[in-house]
Image 1 (cartoon, one colour):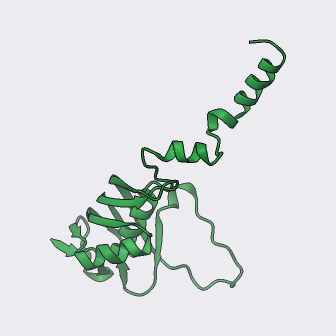
Image 2 (cartoon, helix red, strand yellow):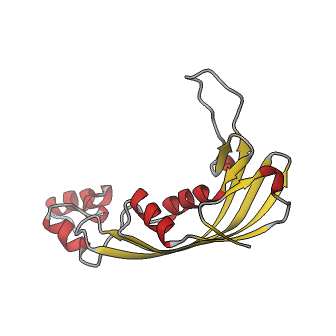
Image 3 (cartoon, one colour):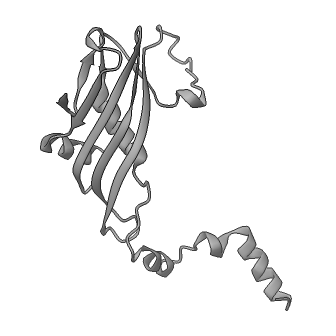
Amino acid sequence: MTDPICNRLAIDRIRDGERLELVAGDEERRAIAKRFDLLSLGRLEASAALEREGPRIRALGRIRAELEQSCVATGEPVREIVDEPFDILFVPEPAASAPDEEIELSGEECDTVFYAGGAIDLGSAIADTLALAIDPYPRSPGADAVLQQAGVLSEGQSGPFAVLAKLKKGRGEG
């Protein structure tokens, strides 16, 4: 079954073991690119197998995307290909709690998406998964030179061992 990426699925119609192939159309890719400040999103696809346990739905699959973002140093386009597995658990929103009460999730629940009503939004969860998969600090080939010219030190130049090496050289050891 091929569906657009913006995909709301009615809980009562999801079959355990159901498989979906989702493909974002041009308009959806433009909207997602704008939302995540990407220069372009040329491709966004996902395949998912759904497992159902009552109101809990698990989506296991793979996301594939081709995109361009701006280099953090030069602003030049940086091409990236994403090909990542995902495991998303959709669970009903917890009962109303006090407004200031925090809800804690364990490490294995980090890919948990709460839903209200009778549907999950798999497409939105896929878009969020893409946002987490992309490089948060994309760099073009010329980025290091630009950063060095601006006085930004690399980790090797500013880390604790670099400081020790400078101290050692200053005492004539080396």
